[in-house]
Amino acid sequence: MTVWTPSDDGFADITSHDAYLAGPPHNTFARMRRDDPCAWTDYPQGEGFWSITRQADILACNGKPDIFSSARGIRMEDQTYAEYLARRTFQETDAPDHMMTRIKVARAFSPGVVAGFEQAIRDLCDEILDEALAQDEFDATKAIARQLPMRMLGRILGLPEADLPWLVEKGDALIANTDPDFTAHVLDRMTTDEFRLMPFNSPAGAELYIYAKDLMAQKAAAGDTGGVLHMILQPAKDGSTITEEEFRNFFCLLVAAGNDTTRYSIAAGIQALCHQPELLAQMQSGSVWDTAPDEIIRWATPATYFRRTAAQDTELHGKTIRAGDKVIYWFASGNRDDAAFADPFRVDLSRKPNPHLSFGQGGPHICLGMWLARLEVRVLFQELSRRLAHIEPAGPQKFLRSNFVGGIKELPVRLKRT
Amino acid sequence: MRVTWELPDGSTITADVTDGSNLMEAAVAAGVPRVLGECGGNLACATCHVYVAEGWQAATGAPGEFEDAMLDATEAPRGPGSRLSCQIIASAALDGLLLRVPG
Ligand code: HEM
Ligand code: FES
Image (tube, chains in turn orange, yellow):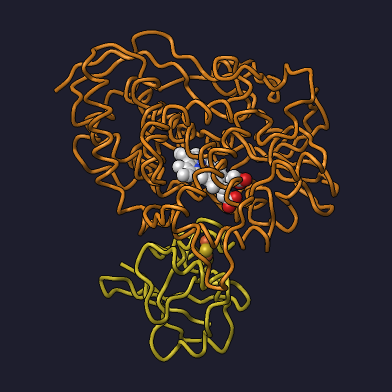
C-alpha cells in the first residue's frame, strides 16, 4: 500500500496556494523533472522565476552560493530593498556575513550539545503521549505533532513554561500566513501595505521581537547562564558578540523555523504509520532508528521550496538564467525524484543512503536545527510505537493552504494501545 | 595524490584524489562512512570532521578562522589534528596523507 497518491492533472499552477490543498501537486513536478527541469514559471503575483525540480540540480546549485544568492530574499514573493532590510535574518545573507552569525549559533545546535537533550525530549514525549493516547480517536496533528517542537524549543531556550502556548500561536501566525486557519492576515488576500515591513509580513513578528528583547534584558539582569540563549550571547572566539538586532531576528527565526517544520514531520510520520502498516513492526523491532528520522523527514518535506537570486548570468539545461532572476529550489520535487530515490512514494524506514533535501542539504544555509529535529522525530516515534498495537485513519486528512510549508494540518486517527 | 582514511575499527580505505579537489568530496566519493559533507563543503555542517594523523598536521596546516569556530560544533569531540576535511585541498605535497575518521 502507498501512503498517499497525488491527484493533480500534471499541469497545476505550482505558485498557487490552493494547488497544495490536496497535498503537493506531484504529478506536475514529475512532468517538470522529466520534460523541463529548469522551467521558467510565471507568477501571477509578481516576477516569474526559474523552477529547479531535479534532486541532483538542486544539490549542485545550492552548493554555489556565489552564483545563487540568498541575499535578495528566499521566498517566492518579491520584495523591495527596504522590505528586505527590515525583515532579514542571517538566513537571507551570503558569506561572509552569513558565517559571522552562523559561527555564533552553531555550537548551541551542534550534535554534541543537542544529544544532551535526549532525556528531556523523552520526558516531554511521555507527557504528550500519555495525554493524547488517553483517547482512542483524535486529530494527531493537534494532539501530538503540534505540541512537541515548541514546548521543546522553549525548554532548550529556557523560556517560561507559561509562555509556550502563546509562542506556538505566534509561530503559526508567522509562517502559515497563507492559511486562514492560522492567521487573520492572509498574505495574498491582503490589500493594505501595513504589514509589509514587519518580520515575516506579520504583526506576530513584531510581537515576537518585543518578547525577545524583554527576554534578553531579563536574562542579563538575572545573570542567567543556563540554556542555549546564554551560549548564543557569549562572545565568539574573535571577541565579537551577537548584536541586539541579530539576536531578535534570530529568535524570531527559531520560533518560525523550528516550530511547524518539526510538527509536520511528525504528522507525516504518523500518516505513514496509518497507511503502511508494516512500519509499526519495523519501528518496534528497534532496527531502523539510525535511518528512520531522515526518511520520515524526506517523506514530510516541510519546506516545499526555498528561493535564491542569480548573482550573475549562468546556464542550466540550455537555459540562460540572467543576473537578478529568481531561482526556486523545489525540495518537495527533489525528494520524490526517482533518479535519486528508488520507489520515492514509498516510505522505507531503512533507506540508505538517503540524499534528501528537506534540510536544504548541499548549501551553506543547511538547517541549523537538523540535529534537534532528527532527535525529536526519533524519540517521538520510539515512544509512540512502543505504545501502539494498531493505528489507522479515522477520516480525511487536510493539508495546509500553502505553497511554502508542506503539512498535514488535520490528521484524524483511531488507535489501539499495547 | 593518495589519501588513506582509518576507520574507528582500524580498517582503512585508500583512494587516489585529483589535485585541487577537497578531501570531503574525496571521502564521499570513496564511500568513507561518517564523512557526510551535508553542506556541500560550505563550512556550515561540520559533518566532514576528521583527525589529521600525527606527522601530517604541519603539512595540512591550521584551520582558518571560520573553520576553527565550526570545529566547536562537531559531533565527535575536537582533538589534536581536528579539521573539517572540506577545507583540505588535495595537492602533491599531501601525497600519502593519513586521516582518522571519528567513531
Ligand atoms: C524537520 C524539521 C526541519 C526542517 C524540514 C527544516 C528545514 C530547513 C531548511 C530547508 C533550511 C534551509 C533554508 C535555505 O536553504 O534557505 C533551514 C534553515 C534553518 N533552520 Fe530548519 N528545519 C527544521 C527544523 C529546525 C529547527 C528545529 C530549528 C531550530 C530550533 C531550525 C532552525 C533553522 C535555522 C536557524 C535555519 C537558517 C540557517 C542558515 O541560514 O544558516 N530548523 N531549515
Ligand atoms: S562539508 Fe559541511 S563543513 Fe565541511
